[in-house]
Image: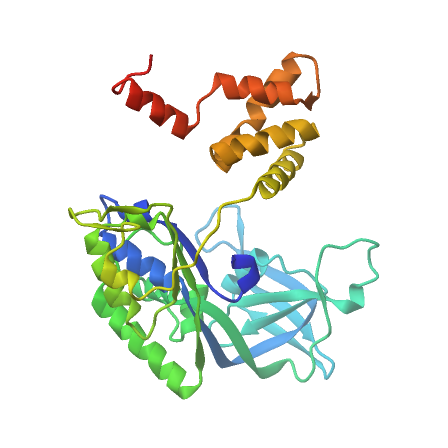
Length: 372
């Protein structure tokens, strides 16, 4: 699903049981995932120095703290475009950023004038024939002057903005905050802060500076959520800043957690009314055999056609998961017998050795809770 959406659309998967934490509130975890699934495409006009690096010389000086070591006082960098070239004398902190981006002579880069942040665009296409094989991306020599105004587009999520504003570290615009984010710690973001960010985001959208990109929030095992979470989801889904939410569960009619109420899929009826329920069909025998064949190929296993058919029939009787799990013990039995290929007899032996969930439940029901 994430592959079909592409890299620019946020896709945030989670499991229902993730909300149960001793550190953070359940509703906080849900809201965090909601905001991870809402993207914002920000366009900003920035003053930058852009070009191909022709020179990069760090200038050293005596360490002001004394001792034998020397320290970088500044760095001289030369940038070239189709229109001209320019030599810049930069702060040592920018030299650290250049090293972090692994910039070398011949790379195309741009440096933001306001913040000094460095972005490596790629290798200049003038060096395309330097090697027979090269993993780098080649880009053309930038046009225009070295010092120019450039439209920079960045994709962020609302959660990124929450974390950047919770710990601001310099820089007045959104992109500067994003560039200077440290590794986030697990912390709760206040509703007041989120409301302020939503105001700024809405203003940016109205001004045409930013574009909202609603993503997808995928919640697996949704029956694990309790009534508090479902109440919160009802409210969150009505918000203007809401992603597409997909719920997945394999439960039929069961109790809603935190209540004694029975409901389809363990989800309250008022929330079910807001959903489109996608009908799923059980796999046919032919489809099961095909899936088992693909799985065996992925695990580099040789499986006889009769063995695949036998496992498919077992899967139809029990479940596909059980038949897939039979591959490993069947391989071990085949290797013990001195064979590389799994035969139908190996599958039958595994089926006799192990129980699937349905068979185990039947035995327990007959023996009053004890296995004999």
